[in-house]
Image 1: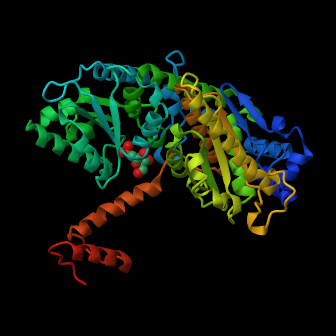
Image 2: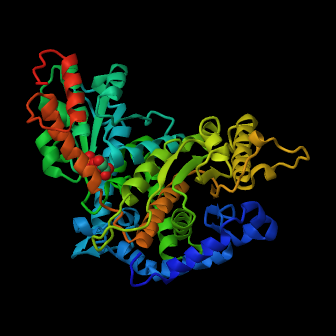
Image 3: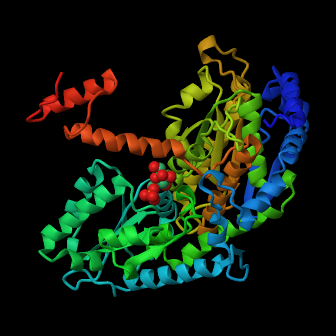
Length: 547
Ligand code: F6P
């Protein structure tokens, strides 16, 4: 924390001391109105944080901290296009990607709202052409399968959205098969390609930089597959079978994607914040442009809420501050994301990148090493499956873990009683688990004393986030809520959530090791890496690396 102003931080430290040793069970017994005081309902979301190890006093002190850190001013900087990504000298304007055209924003003399809407219009034209069967493959057949090739933010967001919103895909002839390929080693392509008809398959190369080796390696393999299958020349294949979603026009052009097949976005869109941009084209292809725009609108509603709602009723602010409370004052450094909805199966992976790549930092705005904790280790799984995997550790392990339970109140309105019952079953499990985690064995009214090994301590804090139902709008709102939560925490921690220098370094090291594997390197590495290289080369033919 900035040494100029640590009052609110210290107040929270003292308060945490006071609360130490108070069990969540006691907090519920002490205040029958706890839920009403520690929950917020707004629009189509309800957030219950009464199962957090906190009181209304804690909340007041956290709100003081937010004010001390000038959160309101930072929110305005974010929305107005200030260069909040200092290390890369860029704005972070993902919110502009979902702004309606009526709310125009100019940055450095450029009307970026009109740029965004022009790009959306180009995307719409392309989506409609493909959906209507007017985009033809090399032999004149209409495209029916789409494969997104991308990694990180150019994969996780669209993959998650396509999975979550599958029920909104058209059921008629406009329906497209949409697949995702990300892994550098070619495993996904190896399995997928034999199932596809090359003449009707379109590849989207999704890469902001158009230089990510994982993506280019997959794109090259895909093109070779098409060349082999069609016996056409590369330029025809590039024109009919490749689209690029990118910020690098020249890079895509050099690879072979003609300009008319390029959907562009800008350097002020961070990779992990890019599903609202051209990177979202697989989503639009899957669920149609109307639903894609509904998703943007849902995110925009959350943006307005984040910008305008008072902190004490502001979902992203509260979610962010609760995390700070757990991490910095209760010393909890593991965070489980538990959607009780199979449609959100990819949500934990998406959040792993959003949260850990954004806030996995230890240098502050003044370029100094900080002396407090930032982003925790975050992981997750569909809750009901996780119950049969890692919940044992949550219930009886030695690690304190904070949990986010996410569910929609209603589902299967038109699908019949059987599926509705399954939804009820899932909700019952969701509520039961947060209750048991909070109260421990005390959650069960039984006169039989639990044996030691049957005892659950409880006191594991959780937040339950309820959506009225999962739709493109609420899905958009949910993702924007977490984006802003991450921003709130970055402001408290005084770090830049929009760069990822650690990841970039990894790419450099990999490039030099590829040379070593190809026996063109200089050697002189650490003995472990040398040993791994020697082993690998000895398994292949013609190894001449010296021992
Ligand atoms: O390697 C991490 C990363 O830089 C992410 O931030 C990004 O989402 C991903 O790579 C993909 O980058 P690109 O879209 O430029 O291929």
